[in-house]
Length: 127
Image (cartoon, rainbow, N blue to C red; front, top):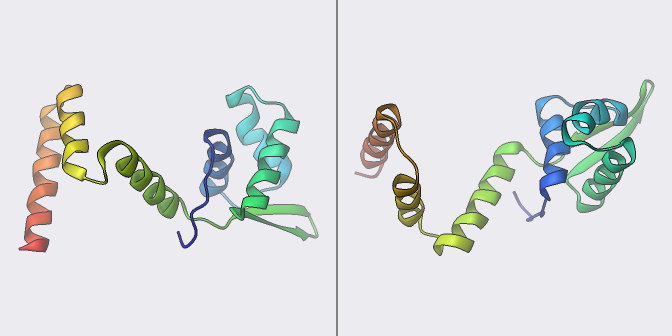
């Protein structure tokens, strides 16, 4: 993500709908987000307006109506949010984050196998 755009949890629900399928009309976004989150149509429209102002969405009129699409990829959003979490809670260090999850959650054998494989791949790439 070139410029950091802070997206709230509620706004991220609108973005998720658009990352799954875009472009969407306001009505389609409402259908995909309102009931699942207990929101009215006005709430969803407000979230769309906020995302437009932040530069996270673009809107365009077409013959069939007004359509929105994301200007931020989901991968860039996840990268930015992950980095902010890492910076805020673990001083930007990955090892303490992994240690936290390993000690706070019961890892399955499959989880451990995936972690080992990932570490081996990273070592091969760096070695």
